[in-house]
Amino acid sequence: MNSFALLADPVRRRIVEVLAEGERPAGRVGEVIRAEFGVGQPAVSNQLRVLREAEVIESLPAGSRRIYRLVPGALDEVTAWIDRYARLWPQRLDALETELVRGARAEKP
Image (cartoon, rainbow, N blue to C red; front, side, top):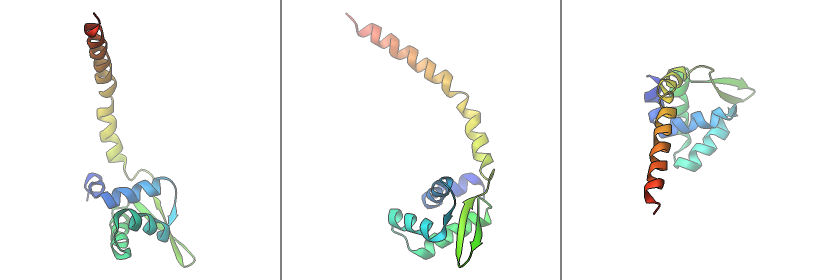
């Protein structure tokens, strides 16, 4: 599954957001997801498994707990795609600013 398909699911996207803040125990990830999406622990575990198998996240044993974290560079495909289009944004924002200034001048009596 490619990175875009993985992130298309809102639960998986939120898990990535939670882990972007730093590593978390599975229970804490589950608490956040269950509270926000109203899904059960098996559904959270399934989404964690999907992300793990896609090598976007990894789990580390810590006693009886599992600690999850993002795999560095796992979403480089998404970053590269965004960067390619982000270069166009300043030009378009400059053009928008120009049009807004023109519109403000036209409204003055």
